[in-house]
Length: 414
Image (cartoon, rainbow, N blue to C red; front, top):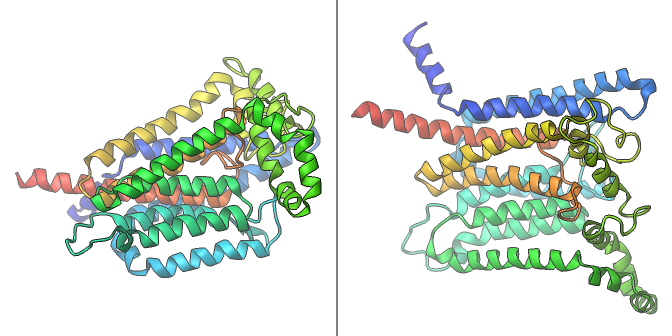
């Protein structure tokens, strides 16, 4: 092997190999579980398994192509030169999704023939990039107002978030989007940001307090009271608004007490818990889940975790949590080592991207928090989420590779 080829190999190997191993494991494990969760009838089981595996492997292959591309070519400096135009394009895609049909009540997908994609997943990646470009490593003494630096990130955070929640009717993705942006906002250390960062922390605390209150029996009694129903009947305008958002409140009630409406709004959540209760140590066996046969509407996507627990038990839980937490640990470790705020935001933004989805998905199907309908990244069925997740992981590996290259160069100089 020539000297140049040796250097190229060494350069590629400066990424963290454990992250790649965990990503490969999670995507292949997810493919197996998607195939299992997709079997809803014994009559066409073989056909379902083959088609599910082929489709998901195509997503995985496309995702890892983007992953490797980002490791090799990503440059935040290049992104910063055209990010305003890119944000305008993402905003246009978010609005355009409303023109297409809804899926599960959300107008979150753009369909192009047999293909469809979800713009909100792209927006989450750009939220991280926006904070890194506009807010990080800003030490100019002539900047006197935070608004000078924070305008674009705040605009993207609130406007895109409102579009996703209100226009697309996708509360789960909107909440995840704003959560990722909120965490990224806390990382830059410029003193001009302190008031905004304190405000974000207070908002997070308020959300947890309000969520806890909405899950109480007192709120359930109020929401189902005859007096509230009479008030809604007397006020038609308020009644129309209530009818549109009522199902969101019912998610809180179901999380607070899964037995509240076990033949209605709580039915799927209760089925999810019943399935997981059968898991024990080793589960009922791969492919032997009962709940996926019509008891869970989206067993291969939003509800894939209960199927994993039912079929594989605690072993299945470990197959999800161990690789995830290895990735979290490595991303946090490098975020404490890198020197620039931009690199910290890219690494911690990636960590937030993964953790918030995991928390919302698993928390929702276990009744710890209200259901949000977000996927379990790298495991749930879905092409856009797979590609965007591996794209942002590739960006983090790019940061890690550059950091390790700098450290090696510094050591060689000595």
